[in-house]
Image (tube, rainbow, N blue to C red; front, side, top):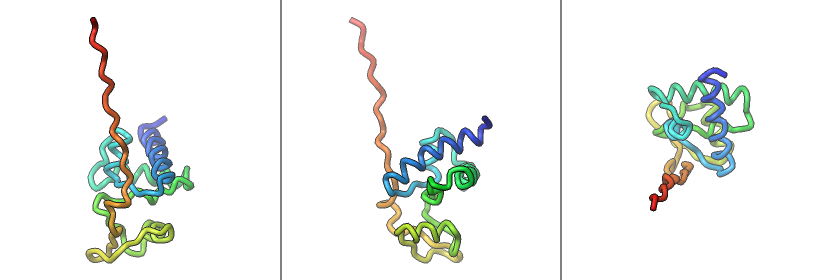
Length: 120
């Protein structure tokens, strides 16, 4: 399995969690949770999302948005978000922004590292 398909599979699992929670996630949070860097402007994640969109369309790839919530105005991404009940508002130029993004984002509980028992 190639590195990109392994990453796409990891992102697919994360998107399943996000879908079940009916939330959104940022490109950086997905990459961090999957254990790799999002890349410049989220390019690594965007590449993986293309694979997810193709191979697992039921996972709602569009739930992953840019860290600033911007989407290209009139894009399939923006349309799918609106169709699913998320609101967007005009942003700068050719962009719209997810309204109240912070309240829509998935949060994962950080598991504490297990404390090893001290030897007696």
